[in-house]
Image (cartoon, rainbow, N blue to C red; front, side, top):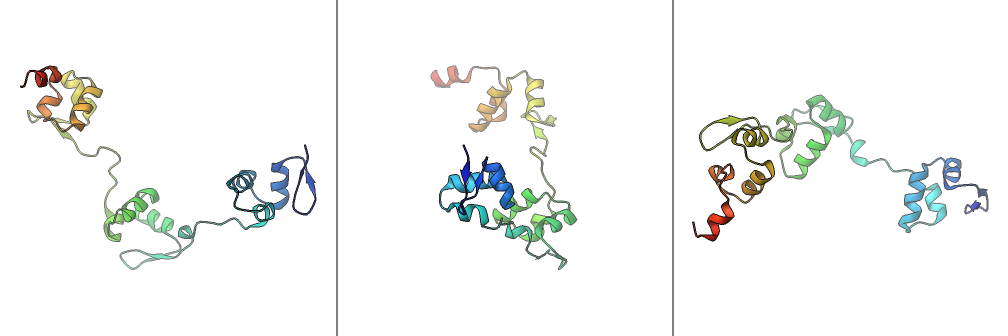
Length: 160
């Protein structure tokens, strides 16, 4: 079924129409589906680049960069991490200089003083199911109770 643009020209598909107007077919589809633009606007409105990627920025040392992405590269900080930190209220210097934690950076200490690289390692050592441990840990139980083989729900029912 042929498609007709705002000037009356026909096309075999949305992709063909989008290519004729020099825009991505997915962008055309998204603009049209959203429903707040006319077909002419969908086809002719310029593609916006994110302003934050084009805006010149200055780091905490006074160095100027073309954009925040370039600044993050210089400081070896992932751009998403940087954005999260700034949006969370971090000062610029800390956002750029704090090392990335990558999930669970610190070691975990159990109730006996042993150190483990992760909760999974701790669970393997104590022979406790990881899901059970997480459930207990997230409820705020003491580490001793988190790794215990006792059925804590029975203890609670008996008033212990």
